Each structure stands twice: as structure tokens, then as C-alpha cells.
Image (tube, rainbow, N blue to C red):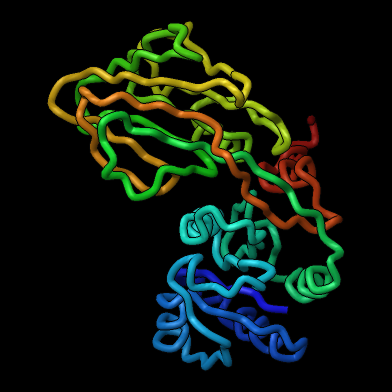
Length: 293
């Protein structure tokens, strides 16, 4: 089996587990390719000498027979691994070296068993919806796909922005707010959740539109089917607003229109058979810690 290892940095207290993972890959005769910046970090900061099969900087550098991309870090790292792989159909394996993680939910104590399950194929592959962003009359954006969310926000800390929102070209609302989040089911447990949006199961075929600090208290998040297209026209003071596609952000002129739709491809993520979305919710959000629940 061939896999790819992606990461940026790892917590210092995870280095021993990371070294153990490399030993396990060698022991089980798994060839691995390493993301170039991650390899440099391993060698310079972790004093590790991995016996890798090759290096990569994007999905095009990987051989066609790579079975999985292992992301070591948190959910943010896994989102970046998706950006590197782009439209690749290679399933992503999230190994959590930190704390909270909905996507990177394989803990350090599960690594060896998880590796055995992955090698034997005893895992579940989840298909996750991706958002596609079209910036009308503006093609300078390098990456237009989001696994979590696409967000528009104001650039300064003073005045709010007005976000004219259309569903399938039918007018929905003008949000006078600090911003607006368009989230996938995967992203429903991320930024959207922090502003009061609902949690969707990963197999839900919907998007969530959640305002950020809306001026009117009656404006609430709304769930729409993912076969609908969403168009945004943003107005405000100054020249720009900020558009974020997962972890990538860039200023956009107010005169520009944004079109958001479901992408033509999904992202595959690996889940262990004894992990379920509902158990992850209970564990990560600490539901039931208060015994009165």
C-alpha cells in the first residue's frame, strides 16, 4: 500500500506518537510520500529521519496508486490537505494530534489499531459535499472549493455590510450584519455552529446560511437544499469586503457578485467503524457531562 503524509507542525507532546507511526508504516511495509514543508519540519524541528518513498507539493505529484492521504494535526490541517489534493478522489484520514476535532477524529491512542483497519479495508468511507465559489468577472482566486464554508465579512471593525442574498435567482433577504456564512453539513459544526447555526449530519443534502451578528434579531440561520444555487451581492463602505474559502481569505471589490453552488465532486473521508457522527458529537461537545442532561 502507498499513502501520503500531510501536515504542517505537530504538538511537541505528539512527536513520540508520530515517530511510532513512522515505525509502524515501515513495519507493515507501507510506502509513504511526504508533503515537502512537513518533511523539512520533521527533519529540522523533530530530529526525525523518515524513510519515505517520495515528496509532494500538490496532488499532481502523487502516484496514481496512492490509497490514502493521512493528515496529522487538527481539522484545520485536514482542510489544508484537501486544498493540496484539490479534486483528487483519494480518501483523507484525519489523525488528531491536538484537542477538538470532528474531521480529524482518530486519537493518538487509536493510531495502531486504525492503521491495521485501514490496511485491511475495515473502515467506512464518507462522501462529503463541497462548495464551489464563482467570483463573477473576477478570476484571480487560486482556490474556489470549500469543504467547510464560504464566508463574507466586513474588512474593518466599524460599519456592518449589507449582503443581498438570492436562492436560484429568487430574492431571499438582505442581511445587515458583520458577515454571512454558507456552510456544508461538514462545516455545520465549525464557524456556522459558533454563530448559532444548526448541526447537520454529514449525509444531509443541505447548506446552512448563517448571519454573523445580524442587526435584526428576527433574522435566523436557514437550511436550503444543496441543489440550489446561492448568489451574494455585498454593499458597504470603502472598497472591499473579505471572502473566505475555508482557511483562505482575500479582499473582494463590492461591485463583484459571488455565486455559490454544490461542486461536481465530493471529498472522501475515512471513519473507523466504531466511530459514529453522534458519538463524536457527544465526545467533542461534551454532551451529557452535566448529569442533569
